[in-house]
Image 1: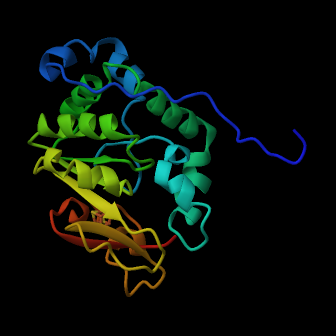
Image 2: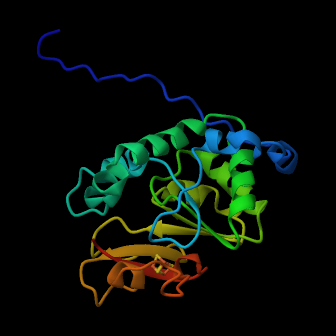
Amino acid sequence: MPGIELPVVGPPVPEIPRYTGDIDRDAWGLMRGGLAEEITGGLAYPSKMDCPAWGISATRCRIGAALAKQPGTVCAACYAMKGTFRAKAVADKLERAYRGLFDPRWTPALYALIRWHATDRFRFFHSGDFQGENHFLNIMRICAATRDVLFWIPTREVALVREHADAIPENAVVRISGNVIDGPAPTWWPTTSTVATDPRRATCPSSKKGGNCGTHHCTACWSPQGNVAYLRH
Ligand code: SF4
């Protein structure tokens, strides 16, 4: 019809299955033959980290995709969209990780990898964010089953955190990210992060001086209280 633009309708996104099984029983056997890696896309070891991590492509961030269109936001300048994560091999791995979320074995598979590879700390979302309620609850299930590991989970999915705060176990530090560069930290949640352009306002030594968390003997992002300010790259 001339003069009227119809919205583009893409294929419906399937729902991530909510895991409710016996995680130890279901994890049994998934480490054989690289099955857990195949299902989850495998763990990552970003150079800025001194522990394993897991994430998906930043192009899958639901809130980030909207924020990326607004100048001055952290997402508009997102390193994951334009830096290392754009390398094809890395992008392919992150996309495989995303697709694995729809496998009903995803939760016990990632749990098995974390049990095997993480000693005391783990990071979720070195890239990407929660993909909805079931994804949030599946990750909390993993954290609750792995109490000897501390989890740092940065997110912009504030509605999920507000709605399911009771499901977050004590060893999971969900860190709400501020949206605007040089903006204030969110005040409604105890663990937050911001991005600063002035090195004097940044508190993350790794972002200011290079190296990684281990180099600086810093675990501030896993701390259950306070804001961490990263220097913008
Ligand atoms: S604040 Fe500390 S723990 Fe967080 S990223 Fe920087 S060096 Fe690592």
